[in-house]
Image (cartoon, rainbow, N blue to C red; front, side):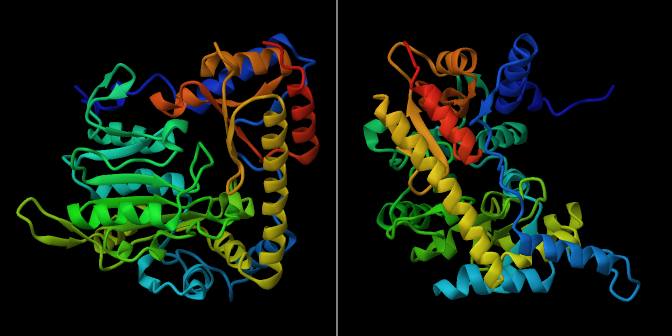
Length: 409
């Protein structure tokens, strides 16, 4: 008899974005002539910048020449990419990160899920609410979440982020061991200032807790007091792991490249209280379960840090931020309450009175042929909201806002 990991059986039937895709496909089958504008799943639409394409072509040619062919590479990432990350994302900002604290991977989604492999099952986990579903679902899979009771996992600690607290999470009343923070936030598009983030770092230092900081959207930050890295906060290297991605910054959603920073000063503990280096544990996990990002992809990622690469990527980010502004202003003109979209590609909109998240989703799909993401899919505090993304084309974004003028509820 084959026994399964029964934690998987506790999960809802499908992933949030699979449910959305199914609903959209059903609508398309019944309405084949409808022009659907997708502002739901956060996939990008702009192609890879030309400097990155050139690097890809060059690397592909190298793979066809015996003298430059590459087979297995270092699982942690090639030195050329690790050093480019180090110089451009950390040292240039005055942050003291070392090369062997950076681990190149195939995506922050993978890393934020896989990081649980090195963390004990008895840790108490806190998540902001609403929250990126991967953080919750992977802890369910690992057995840390307990059971789903009244739409909440009874072993997780939920930290509400709503308009009532200006989307600034309050410290948990009970002691927790692991804290997931994502800023700029997915799904709300909101941010924390340096002082607000310091509150969490201080909490973690006092309670020997670990912060898992997802900074996948840091390139979209436009305001000065919003930190680009948690390591800008004093003491963070003692308590925080940072996740970064090329997906939304450089269009690598299908190309797949990211990295995770685990400082060597960051310690976990055995049950007997002995200190253990999380950097060493992750290195062991990474080298055992992962063979590294392909050479050609790492060369493409390296090109993101060239002068021309930076210029082209900045242009793409500004394009999406302009879309976010158009959505934010258009929704506000319709009398809807809107959040985010200033330091983020995500816009968090309050549903019209009387409509649930899924109710507003259905209305937009069926009446205006616009796809959003129901806020409740991100957690209980997401009920009554809808997430829209700025990753479609400028033309489709303008068309969507034009259609939203026809809202009649």
